[in-house]
Every structure is written in structure tokens, then in C-alpha cells.
Length: 565
Image 1 (tube, rainbow, N blue to C red):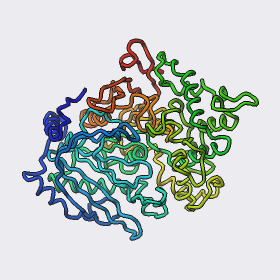
Image 2 (cartoon, one colour; image 1 turned 45 degrees about the vertical axis):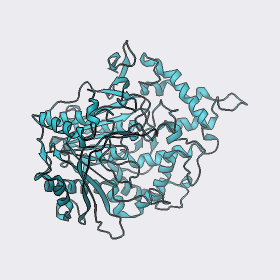
Image 3 (cartoon, rainbow, N blue to C red; image 1 turned 30 degrees about the vertical axis):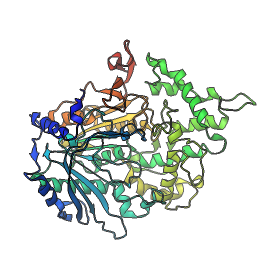
Image 4 (cartoon, rainbow, N blue to C red; image 1 turned 135 degrees about the horizontal axis):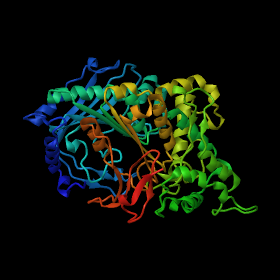
């Protein structure tokens, strides 16, 4: 349902949040911050003792606790993703900034931000991070996949919070350098999110006189991994979790991404014009297979079987942007082939799946999507990587240097996993969110929603599919259906561009957790990134392995498609 424009006028959003809380008959009830919000906010500045934190930890120091006035919606002209261009309107709230001291004096502190609404609905949302983190997550942005025309969780009355994951990016240093410190690595892997969660709960208790009745975690990419980590490592801490495009098999991803980058050295690198060539050929082969020629590959599994990059091989004695040489054909095949680990990984995982198909030519500077952003870059790969190289090469090669080899000068083209088997096993146990045993999370009534984008080249969407199938194999189909769903969005890149990608997953999750209503009839919307955020086209959001087949009518309407096998 569209939200009236009046809700986006600064303080009016607070009134709407109070109304939403008051209208809830089964969820938590609204609680005020206090008769004097400024004084109540300032009173939160006392430290939080380590005893309130469920892991060995230093104390949490509050750097500031400030009452922030309401602010209006702002939309930037450019950004790395559609959602990043939007600064949502915010109600007046208490903004708490702080840090959790490390146990190792040489480790960085964990920074955090907690936002407390003046009228609390008894719920909280922890936001996950992205990339290698190192940037404080404020908890003030849209939630992953969120509709542009809906109020943020804070505006709905949720307490929101986030962290930098226990390290801060340093100018001139690779973003992976923090991993040389053991405590910083453990914080990045899982501990910081648990510690900040516990501090936030203590602050809620202090501010409102009671702990939250419902706790949620939402995250995308690295934040999606963090979300699954919470369900696996800390199953009692959250009632509902939403994980979008998670980097689940983290060790496999870094190794496979580096392998894919090495495949583009020398004659294997595809120029931007050749990336567009592949993109157009994929559409020609697969676009209309779902019944609608709409530049979306709706059934990528079938398309992977249908399209062969060898069909673009250059004729003998020819070359140029209108064909691929043998090394380039092999590079494309490498991208779409599984990486098989020569050493044991956590939870018995042995394979990282190949990437998907569709969206290859998404403009690199319009969004962090497509091959030009993630795989090929806009210039041939180099050692050390340059900003013009693909992000996966920059991320993967740096991870191998700092996480696994712990040798910042290593030329990863000479890296052999067998030489670092013990270290790989250690990091895999820390970082890989591949444990299929979600029994404790399910037993406490937790609900888990996953969403994979099928034109994602930052990570393989099939890693999420493999994880979901491992949960089903471990827990059984009926048991899994009681608490977990996996959805897929065809044609959507890592950050939500290329096809309809916006849906109120937090609302669906809360309905399931608090009212027992399992998600049904969800729709993806593609919206203009300007008020009133008009919907350009929509699709049904299908549960895996279903995909949206065109059945006739207006191709821009979700009702014209049916989830099919």
C-alpha cells in the first residue's frame, strides 16, 4: 500500500509511527521515552557494564546521547544503488553513540549507534553492514529491499541500531588489513553484532523501563551473512531475521572470486563492449522464454543451459568487440563453474557454486551491478588491484592476503589453498554462515526470510539456494516451512537494480513473528527514485524454485505473471 505524502514531512512521520503502534492489537504497545525526552536521552550517557554483554567484553562507553530533531526526506542525484540515493525522513529521536572496549589493547573498539524513538513500539531492528565493514552503520537508512515510499523502522517506532563490526577503515590501508588482529577478526565474524545487540537491549531497558518484546535483524550482502550468523550462533537473540543476498559461504566466495579474476588476466579480460555483447546475446537467447520480452531473464536456471558463450567465439583469424577469443570464452565458463575446495571447509561444504546469468551489462557507474562493476572492471586486472578492476578481484585477492595467507605482499596468482589448509579451516569456522542446523532458532519461534537476486555478480545466488537446500535436508521440508522461506528476484543485481526489487520484507517478517501469518502474495516493485516513488513495473515475489512466468496482460503489472516451475 502506498504511504501518503504527508507522512514524509519531518515530524509528521512520528505521529504516523504512534498511530501505527496504537492500531496494533496483537503486537507490543507504545511506550514514551519520557515526559522530558531531552533529559531522558541525556540520562542514557552512563556506561554499560560488561556483565550486560553475553560474551567476554570490555565495558561499553557512551560517547554522546543527544535528542535529534525531525528531518525531511532528501534524494541525491547519484549513488551506488537506488536506495543509497534516498535519505529517509526521520522523526525526533535520541541518538546514542558509543564504543565497546576490546580485551586486546591492540584491537580496535567496537563502535555503535542506537536510535531511540520518542514513542517506542516495543520492537527493535539491528542493521547489518556491508563489504568488509569498517564504517559505522547508523540504523537510519531504508531496510534492505525496502519500498521507497514506506516509513523506516525508526519512523514506525522501532529502536534501531548498528555497528562498524569492530574496526574502522583507515585511509591508505586495504579494507581487509584489520584481519591481522585476531580479536578484530572475531568481532567482524560474529562477536561485535552480539555485543552491540546486548548493549542496545540494556539501553532500551534504561530508556523505557523494559526490554524489547520483539527483536529483528536485517542485513544485505555481508550484512546478510551477519543475519544468518545470528540465527546459527545466537538463536535465542532474535525473533525475526531477514537476510538479503548473503555472502554465506564466505571462504568459498573469496577463493572463487579470486579464481574468476585470474581467469581474466592476459587475453581473458573482456572489454566493456564485449560485456555488452554477452549481455545482448543472453537476452536474445533467454529474455522471451518466460513469455514476455522485457529484458529480464526470469528463469536463469534454464538460461544457463540454453546459452553457450562459445556461440560468440571469434571466427578464425578475426578479433574485436563483436566476438570473444578462446580465453574469454573460457573466462565466462569459469565464472559459471563451481569452485571445488581442495581443503576441508566448515560444515562439510566442499563447493562454491558458479554465478548466474542475466544483467551482465548493467552499467558499472549506475549501480554496483553487472560484470563491469564486480567481475571484469573497466580495465584489465592488475597486481596489486586498482580501482578500475572488478570489485570481486579487489575483495577476493585482499581476503586471501590478509585473512588466509596473512601475507600482504602475496601475489595471489601463486596462491595454493593446500599450503594454508589449517588457516583456511580456522577462518572458515569463523566466517562461513553455512551451518544448516537451525533447530534452536526454530524451537524458540524464530522466523527467517532469505532473498537472492538472480543477476547478482558480487556473490552467487546459488550459494543461498544450496544453503536453503542444506537446511531442508537437515530439518525436513515440513519443519523448514514452519520458520523459513527463500525467495528469488530475477534480473536484479546485488544492490537492487535492473528489475523489480523492492518489497516490505520487515513487515512480512513481523506479521509472521507476531501474528502467525506466513508470507503470501508478496510483490516486487521497481520504483522511480524521486517522490512520489512511482512504481514503474512489478512482479510477484516467488519462492524458490518457482519463477515468474508471463500469463498475459500488461507486462508492467505483477498480476500478469504467475509463479511457475
